[in-house]
Image (cartoon, rainbow, N blue to C red):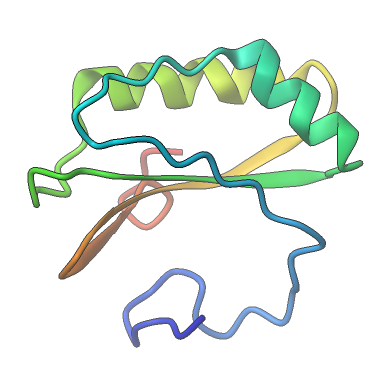
Amino acid sequence: MQMAEHSPLTGWHQSAIRSAFWQVPASLLIAVYPREVVIEALARNAAAVILCHNHPSGSTTPSRADEALTATLKQTLALVDVRVLDHLIVTPGEVFSFAAHGLM
């Protein structure tokens, strides 16, 4: 994976042990269940996670639902000592980082 110069991940000397991706048709509304994220993080013995999803609309502006979900996942994962390092919103031409914008 190649990161853009302005990416918040540029220069990290960390490597992901594993990544989990769920892919579904863009026309479907996806529900994210915090318990399922916790189960996946614990199954991988993760100390931290980076959340990532796309916006098919092409806009990287976080919605209120994105902000609420980030807060919920941070609180839920903190209960099992897993940190949320960032939440990325990806479009074909741009990546929005919650951490880079002080939203973490």
